[in-house]
Image (cartoon, one colour):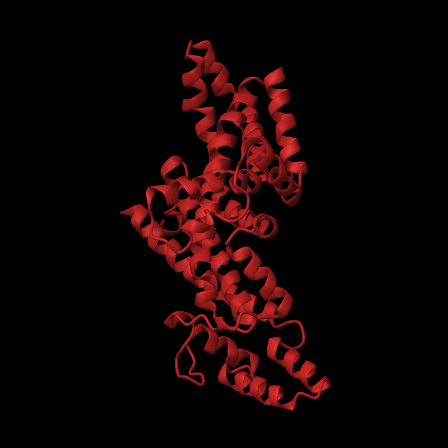
Length: 342
């Protein structure tokens, strides 16, 4: 029951935070002077195309871009009536993409699920790599194992994602015949799910997962190693060792459990860093994620598309943070989430 109350409280906090983030996103997007249509109108007038100006002015009125900024924000959320009544994010209307000339929902459609899938696989890769290597480096501190894993970690941190993507783009295809470009073979696009399609997706995920997850795995491995070394030097570990507790049990039951807390807490920070890091990788590897759409929207000031994508990333971050908080409560009984009630 306590955990349920904590979860409800965290959901309420998350919704309030998301509301504040949405206002900040909308404000930042509108900081540069003008918007997609006003820039287009200026360009049309400079070339004498008055017929195009009339159409652009109509679109400005149609999507409430001729109203004040606070009113535009409330209409975008769906809590204030616009030209078509209450029609915004809350009603499932994400707006119109002027850059792609279609609704935002159609632009991001399958790309949202592709983005979630790629980043979930990357998160799994980060934890599956960082956990054993970080523990191994701490348990074998100042040995060749520690030096090799540290070198690999520093190499992963120092190598830019786009450069690693270009390297694997060439050598992965040349020597291992790995498919590069997209997240599935072209013949499976638009087709219903099948075993062959799943195999194609998994094969195409190898390179993006490695590229996107390498830096995150390297950073987390170094952090876990440092936390483990700090715990291994504490008196309770020495006492347990003197009492004859087996090394494997001693390592996993006490120091790892304590050192694992920051490891779990990083879930909320890991998701946005992976998504932001995957934008250039998506462009280089031709992945059908929201990265290329976001880049195009920001360049052209396509505010509805950029706003929705950024809000989606913020929602993923908050969900990841809430999941990490719940896991921390279950993992460490010392964390008292009911402190405010006492």
